[in-house]
Length: 166
Ligand code: ZN
Image (cartoon, rainbow, N blue to C red; front, side, top):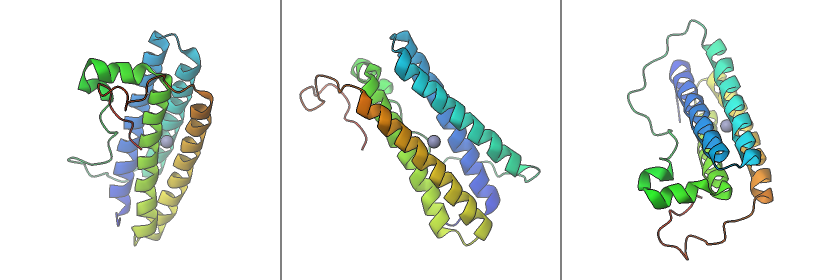
């Protein structure tokens, strides 16, 4: 994907803002269900996204960013919009972690496609750095997913739940 620097930075800021917001929601949800361990995972992911967003804003400096009309790199909608079953699905820490991971992968792929496709060298280098950071987030979530018990019913057994995004 070939983006000019202002467009790239605008996407990156929006992407990190969105992630920070979602992680806060996930952290609160886990806390409400007394899962302090997974809640704190999401709180630190929230902090990473916020720090990343702040450092991007520093790079933005006085560059005027374009307003994004609509963009396709928002997190996929949280399953709770699907109703009760969706909510039940998300209160399982395993599923919430998988959901977060799927969105980190999308962010990583976005940065990678810019790193590979941009004609601007500065944009390519920045996007490459960001893709690397996202890869670290994916790895951190993977570690937690490994430590988290799978829910007893898989979604195949229970058609009321929403399948994980892979
Ligand atoms: Zn991330």
